[in-house]
Length: 174
Ligand code: AMP
Image (cartoon, rainbow, N blue to C red):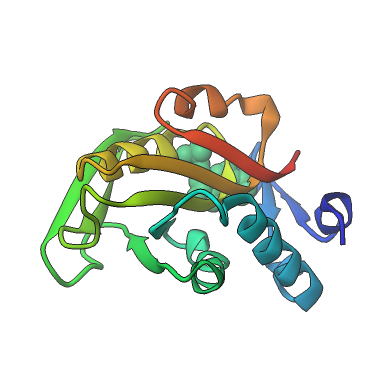
């Protein structure tokens, strides 16, 4: 498969969840094993020689492909979640959204200063969520942070917000 072929399997839903948003629905691609395999293999090829020690996925669509990649790289998977979901002691960060403030959390014992982290989410829009996730992971003093998305919405320039703190890569550009 190619990036262009997988792109054709991603469904566009106009005006979801609110008017004016073109929602990129990956569930149509996820139904197809060849698309799943392509996403996993592309990520494995990108990151296999980078010394990654943990893959950190952002709730909730960042939990789908990341564990498959972690297994291939022989490293662990760590979830970043919304408040109240993680059962043990957490570290958190709050960030400004278009309307109001959001918070994300990670388990306090999930990372250490020895880690090289690959942060993953399904889609890069404005970059606000991932910028907060990078800051959260950096609280652990980790050695290096890589950032990966399945899809990047180029016209929103979210990448600009992230590239100071991490090396950013996306499998599909829209
Ligand atoms: P942002 O913080 O603006 O980069 O938004 C990123 C988060 O919102 C990701 O977790 C995405 O899953 C979700 N998201 C934002 N815009 C879209 C969109 N147009 N289609 C699908 N998901 C989106």
